[in-house]
Amino acid sequence: MQKETIENYCKTILFLDKGDSVKSVDIARELGISKISVSITLHKLREENYVEMRRYGKVHLTEKGKTVARKISTKHRAIRDFLQDRLEIERDRAMIEACAIEHHLSDNTMKKLTSFCKKLDKK
Image (cartoon, rainbow, N blue to C red):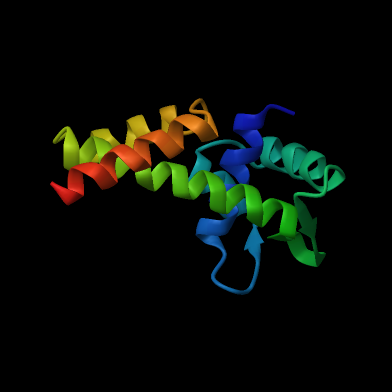
């Protein structure tokens, strides 16, 4: 399974989960894809221990899935904030571009970006 798919699903489930798990239909709606595609991917994610699936289509992240979701969400926020606050990119465009970039930046690059922004804040 592609890293980007894993990250997108984990991030989406984390975003949608308000304490009572998430329904696959909600994931499909949020990602804009078919319920059958979501079902197939969720089964693969379960096999790889990113999610647990309960009765009646309830899905929740395992610790492994939560780790992935938190990491990609942190990357997303940092990139979005950089684009929006530093480069003055319009909010909606910054959100879209952060989604595109977040999966491709290495951890090292993210550390450097974060460090760079902190230096700018001190000036």
